[in-house]
Length: 236
Image 1 (cartoon, rainbow, N blue to C red):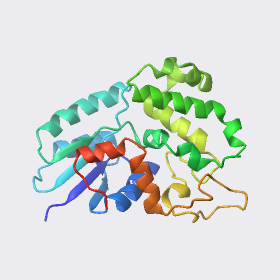
Image 2: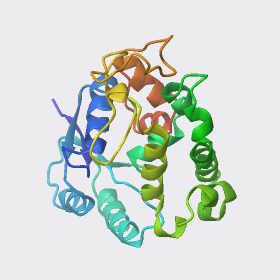
Image 3: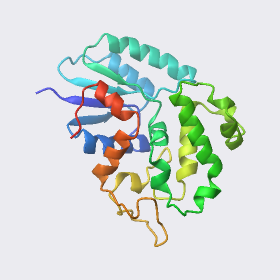
């Protein structure tokens, strides 16, 4: 029987790998997640793929304002078209997936959380960025709320900015996401966070979810739903 693989560019010790491993185990458990360490190695792996029996789904971070990434993506797209068993997911990066997640703010913060006021600038920047990308507006660096949040916006591409905004929203919570670590509240059932303190109350405190339900919410509240439907994958 043929197998289905999800090839990603994230190293095994990074948060991107943790996210994809957790998500796929819960939603598409028959899909095998494999790391190719970086985007260049991912492209090489697809180019040299000789296997025609199994299916390969490729996650290549589409940082559309990074010239090197665009060059690699062009090569990857051309090579993939020549192979009937290779499909590309159209995604910016896993951090952006979590940024666009409709319930992000509702999960991270309790309704009366002081952080909702203290982090209003980054929350507004997130809202404007997601709307701009959804509208197909690549000129996100000209948006006032994003410029107010990040005065050196010119130093960032879309992937870097997504990671920065996600961290600034989630820092010092159980949902904190950095390049090297994924907050336990993303990848564990409520409330299995080993570092939880008595005053650590999030938006899920009164409606606790198990890990499968969390991943299902993320699927349904992001672009992942349409992307996997396009590939014909069925939810477990």
